[in-house]
Figure 1 (tube, rainbow, N blue to C red):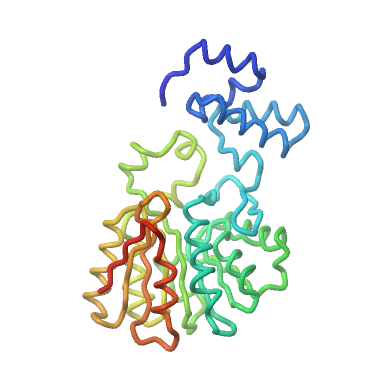
Figure 2 (figure 1 turned 90 degrees about the horizontal axis):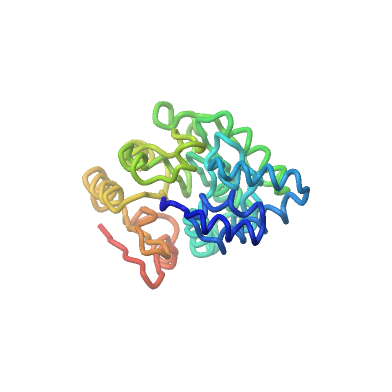
Length: 306
């Protein structure tokens, strides 16, 4: 982060005495700091709480942990320390998936598993958008499992068909709905390699967000291929990725494991970064091809078919 000059601090303090405390996380952008101060003031209202929040931001505490929520699609997702904060990139592909694949699906009681569910943002947005879907939210963390339950209530989804399961999908994936075959599996796994986490992640992320939800590489993609695909536990999947190399790993591994039986592609986000690897049975009972063709199409999307 660039050093913030005393002159900039003085300028910010002349606008509002609390503003200098927000300059660190806004990388010296006064306008961005003003926007954040407005969010904090609108949410917390109490001058004492606003001051405390500004001091916390000076110590790099993520804004979402301070305000205790984050908008995600139609939901207001509660956020807690120890559970990953939902990102706009995840929201973007999740809403595209609902709009183009889940929404148009004629399947009644569509069975969806959301692995590494964290706050439950993906699972609960799916349940909100398709009330007849049977959705299982899975996470290894007891903190995440409790928070998903809170988010079910907070968003009025008590009557939705949502099940929350605590399980280690790398060691005991069979504990997730034993004997059940899913129409769709979604997952936002830990995918940041250790060296990239240290070099590239912000101080805020490194200090406060759970490393177990962030640091990884191929473990969960290997589990996808070797268990969920190879064992025939799902008809389709969408996994978030951090690099095109992770997409290539999944495409090559599926090609070697079940050659010709699956279509696999890459979805790019609005920043033109590889964001998801997705796949579906080539000869499934549903017209996945047309649905996923719509899912992948954006002006900067590229799809690879094997």
